[in-house]
Length: 318
Image (cartoon, rainbow, N blue to C red):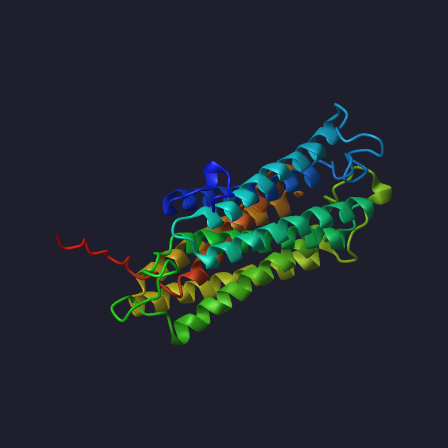
């Protein structure tokens, strides 16, 4: 630990939690900024990678160039947040190896995103790579949400994560556990069908029709599949709320209520944007809500194992 720079030495658990929260928010914001690139037709504002243009790194002072280059620059903010999560997990006192492993997952995901972003530019915004770019962002949000959740978990006497004891709340079992798993899988299915709608819709990421390749599906048909998937997810989440209430799993019920509320709002925005011709602002709101809803679904799944009560350290007897 002595080789670490001073800001990341002897990191308290409270400070580390603030860093994991920052990483989670940074990864959420870049999903929205990436959506702004596509919605404004700025996907080829920088036609090369990693340079903005073939012979220059910095973008020209033009609308599309600045939006695309700004999104690339914000990747640097994400990288700083992720590096802090890694170094903070090493410098945390006590150090927990589970936090280090999950923070390295963020590093791998960000590197993969940078590479995939370059491929997206080189293939002139191929919608299949665009879908992969968004779905990988959701994987990163899942990783960051799990890391932040574990950072709030109490430390055990051996310095690792505290294992639940006999007096702690038990893990969720039976039909409630099955319903939460179905909700998690349903949340992933909603994301996948949503990206298919995006890949088939009008917002390709470029204002140039000749490079605006789209998936060979009718938007009406894939939008219907997407909405049916979302309605099924909402039905499962309502079932989670009902069963959690009957089994007095109130913490899990609160998380499910959050997911249900976000799904209702997200559905209203989705229908409004569809029947109003998919205006840019509503699509941007839909992207942001999709990210927040996915984090809520991940938190619902993490609620299957309630955190144990912190260990009370006894003061030495004089």
